[in-house]
Length: 253
Image (tube, rainbow, N blue to C red; front, top):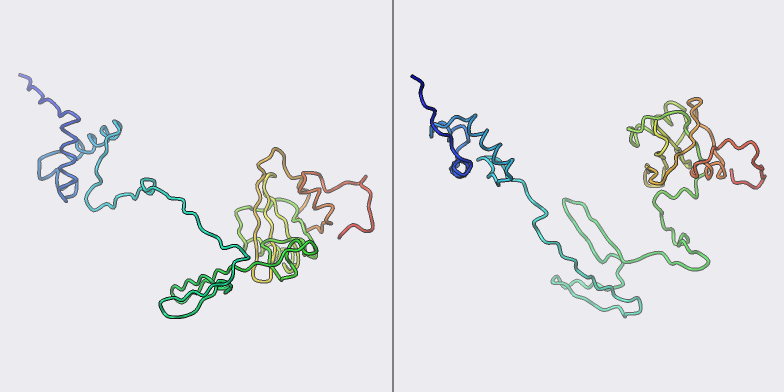
C-alpha cells in the first residue's frame, strides 16, 4: 500500500514563513529546527521567491545593504560675490574678524590635518595668459621638461608610479628629474607617462577613445630621446621614424 504524499506549500505560504523567520531574530537554521522545517526546503523556497522578484528580508545578524539611490539629490546654487564688491567685515561666534579678501576663506581641521581652500587665483593678462608669472603650479605640465624619453618595447602596464620609476632608475640607470618618460604595453591604444614635479611625481595614463593607435617602437628594449617634433608625431599616431622629413636646426630638442 503506497502512502499518499502531503501537498507542498504554495509560494504565498512560503513567503509568510520566510517573513516570520527573518523577523524572529533567530538564524534561519535555528528557526527551521524549532518549527520542524527542513533548511534545504526553506532555502529552496527562498530561491524560488527571489526568481519571482519577491522582496526577501535579510537574515538575522546580516547588515542590510544601504541603498544610496533611494535618497533624493538636490542641486544647490552657490552665490559668488563679484570682484568689484567691497570687502565686508564678518564676525564669527568667537569674535574673530574675517574679511572677504582673506585668502584663507575656508579652513577644515580634522585629526591634526588642516585643509585650506582659498579664493585667490593668479592674474591672467594678455602678456601672461597662463598666469605663470604668479608662480602657479600646473598639474602634469610637460612644457618645461628638458627631455622626452620613450621606453621602447613592451612595458607591463599594471605597474604604478613606483614600478615605472624602478624601470627608469634600476633598469636604465637614469634620473627622473626634468624629463618625461613614456611607456606602452601590449595594446598600442594606451600609454603611461612619468613626470617629476617640484612637489611629487605624476603618472599620466591615456587611453585612446578615437579610432587609431600609437606607432610604438618594438624592436628592442631601450630608452630613446625624442625631439618635440617626434613627440608630436608619436602622439598623432605617426611613426617617429621619418627619414624623408626635413631636419631643421631650430627644432626643439
